[in-house]
Length: 323
Image (cartoon, rainbow, N blue to C red; front, top):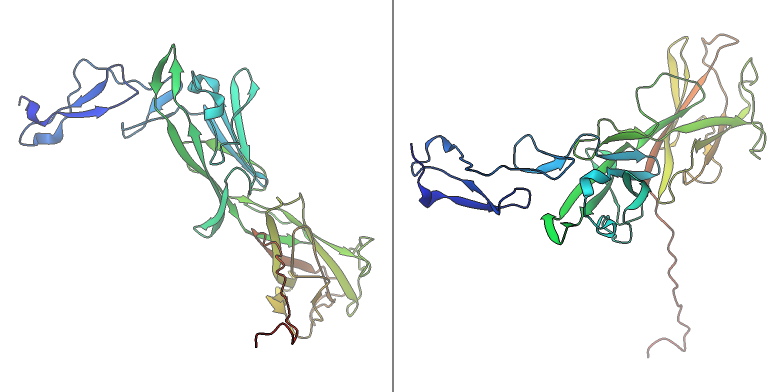
């Protein structure tokens, strides 16, 4: 069936050799077949046509995001940005623009509270979000590609565990790198450690192995991230559990609030940016062996830090009060 040129649709594009892509449909809408006559659609160097054929995107490995516990970093191969002014490659805050890493790569990075980055929750995960803007490509005085705005994000398990024992885990604590076009393959998790100390001064770390603690004595614990959290983050401790795995018995000593009978208390506060300290009365279970090993595990929740704000209030004296 010959196409009806009354139904020619002109789609402007900066990624083709001609000025327009012609998509032709017949007057009856028969099979919606598209005809492209004498025009070859091309993407810029180091870009490729998306699977749906509707847009250009980076070739695999040419633009990659690295998510870490300090923020996000994007590395872009220069072959994909021919003719693009590096100052036009920026995040939401235009002051955060691309810098040259080497002869082949541009780099741009953000922390949790930098460059216009926003913290939020998506699918119950702590999420860092920002937008990468790429300006026009200008070669020999001609604009050969359009401006791009590409949203990206990093997701984190905001619930972590700190334990006195080493356990196998399927969560990822290191950095993770993936193509800018792709979804993040796995969430990152923050890593925390739990150590016990000899006294409430928290100066000397205690060795509680080989029968070193006596039931009924006070135990002094300290939970801290294994690497410093970003300044815009803090963590709180919501639950702590004591367990004797050899007899499959456990008891919560903290469940949002201290559990009665355990003498659990926080040294300073339940949340902090660097460390949370606590103490409780050590115990074993009635059927525990004399030399049993007790595991202590605490649940940690990472969230956006709320800074204290002080508001001055003026108290009126009798003479100041309105008559």
